[in-house]
Length: 312
Length: 297
Image (cartoon, rainbow over all chains, first blue to last red; front, side):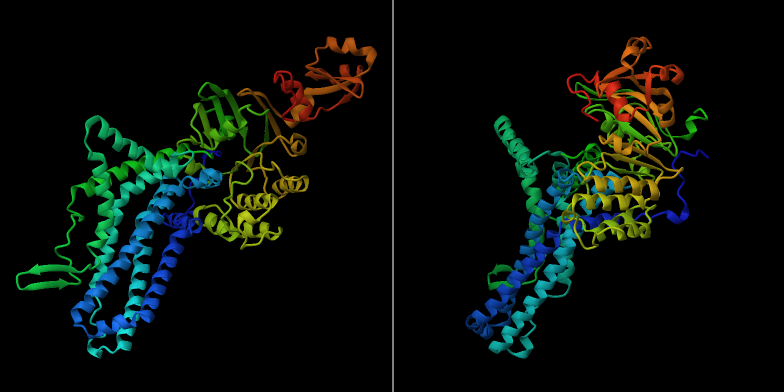
């Protein structure tokens, strides 16, 4: 055996394949605490708002107490889905800034030289950051949304009780339990829709020497403008717009926004209806899959760039 | 591969690297055997850092380079299991807690001995809950050294590891390294501008200038090969006839530096001294370096 070659891996010293990856993910959360704090603060604000309303608006709710079950459910459905929408949009903003920081900070504070001194490949590093964006951020959004929705439901029910609703209707406004699974599915879909956006942001973060935020926006704007001037068309802008909007609207179509249908015999309100709200954001959309391909290319490019990167 | 090369930890042949029009490495040949502590000395811009970066797989290069049997640029993460480096002072991120640093390295490095790192840290005033940003520069270096020394590595590369530290921390740094880390199965490659402080711990020295290795020699050979003579004024012309490689004035007397001249002959000319690395450096590179002689020393 050659004395100066790398020693073969002894069975005892082998770190399992998944453990380093989990540490890379934890490392991201240590550095970017806002991923956890921002939704918690938002949750606090929403709950405070709900409590404040409960105390302040008992008058108007008292009126609601007299109403039929249906409108009460409708009102709650609006609140319920608004919470999901708010948290989802907030997490998109958090993810955006995280992605731009993810491979820019380590070069600015020179710590890339420390990370690169450890036996971790650039691929693992970039995938850990992508994992935060596609898995961790949606998971936090899910937990926080569910927690806030439950607490708001309790506040809502307590208010109902206070203004004197009947016991039977006390919980009747609550959504069915499967709605939570539906929301989880929507978050997963959102991650897929936004994957190319995150891929682009990671690429900019790994590549730019200054002002990553401007670099994340300006080249795209320039491209859209160039297409407008030279061809007079707007395919790029519409394509990107559709991608991002699908990523955001997919939440709306899975959280139980009440659907109102006009019939000849009257108005039908369906608080937790999932049908009729298909905004074209499902797995059957070709653009979703094209976007995933683009994301794959962008992430591969990011890995390649990170290999060459030095402190700035 | 020749039998001699089989014991080399680092082997480079015709290593080249250019940044645009600037040639950083201009055909470097070097060989670092196992169990040596090698000082790589050179003026600013000589190519030291580029050479180290190539060795660590941080930058691509032309030519042949083998570190512990692998190509560093293609297999950096594999190489890093047995190579450690401190590339600069203060590369630990400010947000990292001491505890997290230990957890993280233990989590990703198969050859990290956590208990060892803990015992090194116990000798310092560093608190587990502190963030790196709250520690002094000296403490950050202590922390980084504790992490690195707890890794059972074959090669340790240090690029200006004590830059900007006060003399107590600098001395402690090399003492710790020498007493608690360095042994015959380990190899250390270090660059520094504080040449005098480390010359007694080195086993080998390499001078680099303008992208080339201009001297590669063990410390024993160095003492044998180079002699400085404080020449008696009346023997100056006789001394000059022997072809000194450098001449300088020390306390009003001429100090002539000779390479490979017999000691007996030189002893007749005046008082013999062993030149320090800094003296040799100025002699060999100071003149060529042009406008800014001796800057690196």
